[in-house]
Amino acid sequence: MPLYTHLLNNEGVTGPRGKKWRDTAIRGHVSRGTGILNNESYIGRMVWNKRNYRKNPDTERRTARVNGCKRVGAE
Image 1 (cartoon, rainbow, N blue to C red):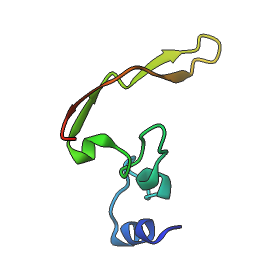
Image 2 (cartoon, rainbow, N blue to C red):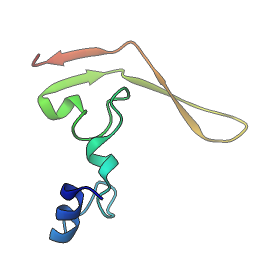
Image 3 (cartoon, one colour):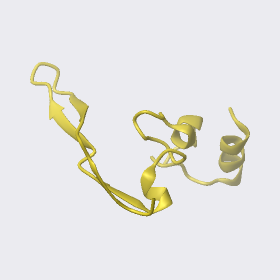
């Protein structure tokens, strides 16, 4: 476990889902723009219409599809 997640968990800081911090919550996935370090809203950019979620009728699970999105704010 990376140092930053270890420190957050030792300090008792609750993670995003009310559980312990994991490195993926901070690091995320670069191409998807997930995680705190890749999330554009943390640098003052508002992103609209980034993903479209559709439900698979066979599995009842949602799948995310990337849309053409509009960015507003600091560059």
